[in-house]
Image (cartoon, rainbow, N blue to C red; front, side, top):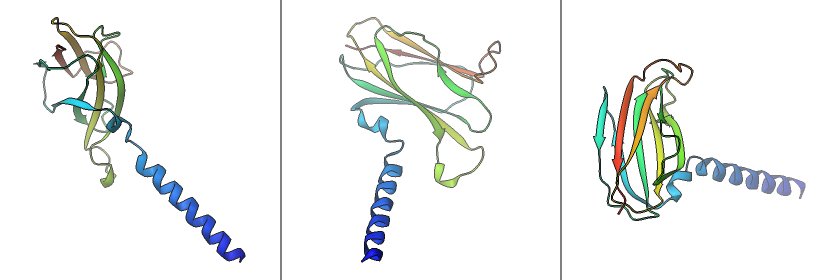
Length: 147
């Protein structure tokens, strides 16, 4: 009887731990995404995109970089007026391979907070966080209009 209770307890603990691991990294999938912008390039890029968003719509920006270099994509806007940052996460593109280096992805999820014909320009920079005075290795500007 004690063995059955112990086995049942272990099975329950294993089930709970597997479900917690499977839910890790799923937070951004909870938002109803209206559009996705992906940039995988090099050099400075001015990427102008007009999205047909309504107030309250969510959109995702995915930016790629070389992993293991210390460089990270950051949003340079301190307080965007028309768009709110609701989620940000960085990590390897293929975590299953568990390889040092490789490609890394930074995901930003924004919500359009008000409608206007004036575009909001989001400024992104690829840089090392500890090198404050250095120029970014890459920059990107994204112009977004919510209607």
